[in-house]
Image (tube, rainbow, N blue to C red; front, side, top):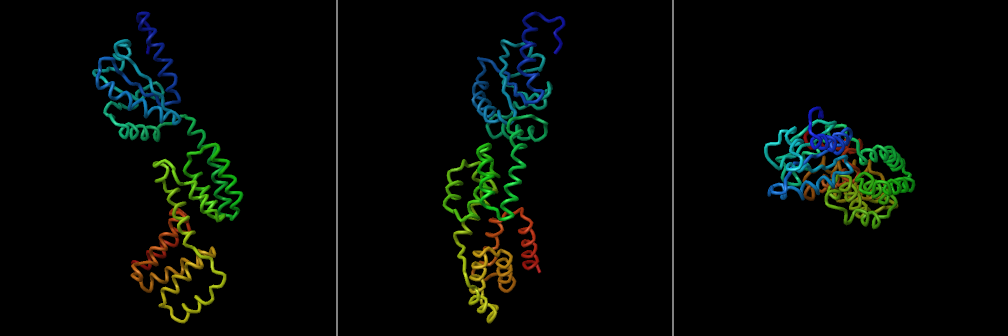
Length: 303
């Protein structure tokens, strides 16, 4: 905003706006709330917008409130016709009119869309960039069977970023791999609802359930003989799959369950397919191994 020809009061308002809105908006998303003391809807919206912006502060969102009675010149520059009027400002320019967002959910939806589209700098984004290679290292340790090291890595990352869903999920899976099921359950119990519903936590929960059902069997030869003698003994093959899974041989366990589905997909109310799906969820739906097994299952079901 140019200041040539303005009164001293208007110049002061422009300088304040530049300091509070324009300069921070170079790297942050500044939410400008135009309001007035006499405006009832403004007072209704204020707690909502203040709460959401406070929650999104770490994401690079800043709230600035502009009283139109005290800053009429600024309001006129933004062509404010009625209040409350709420604009999102980035790099000195309005990028969205948020005036229609009157609930927390609506406002969060708008902010999520803007944050996904704009190169906002934030503490949260910087932290994610810092921990991303550490998470990858933890996952590599898990995949390589170095479960103690994986747990150590994820625990250290949790000290840096305690609400990171990937980190919590990694910690839980490391504990499960070490047989510490109670500790894994304790870790994911009591998580906030928005975290508890995330796929990484669902995966950990499914892995705990699968491990609790698993029964390592030192000698599977008797079950193998029963299946060899009667390939349609699905109960024996199902027990064999459980034993194989308990022994850590998920490839053979999947083969056994797929064979049950191939021979009689309706057996025991579709128990073979249901158990496969439990394994898929526990391993992780994005895992390449799961993708391959799902293709095999689809080929059987739709053959």
